[in-house]
Image 1 (cartoon, rainbow, N blue to C red):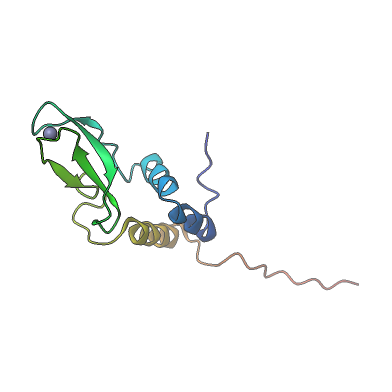
Image 2: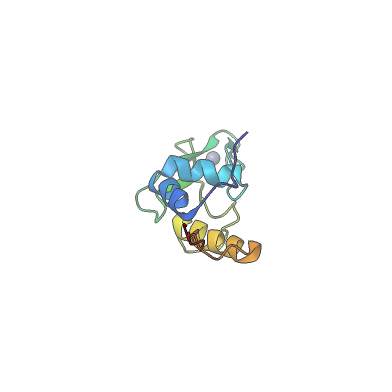
Length: 117
Ligand SMILES: [Zn+2]
């Protein structure tokens, strides 16, 4: 079992640095749907997540049938549908939003002072 409660902003930045980690994180939180399945367009190929450097987030859902041009942005079938932000930007926004509503607003500074005698 993974413990997601221990996440902090530094860990979030670590996740965002490595795309595979970012996707694992998004999948595990159900923010991104794994859409690998038979293509609805041609009904022959299978839709896979592939790299595409022309995309701002470098990934796209594409059918593996060469005669089929069916493709979808990764945003289409996800929580991020309609967004033009990168996944990293959205994830950081979600992070701040979540913490706003859980009341965690400080950065973990210790306020205790020692008055050693
Ligand atoms: Zn297809």
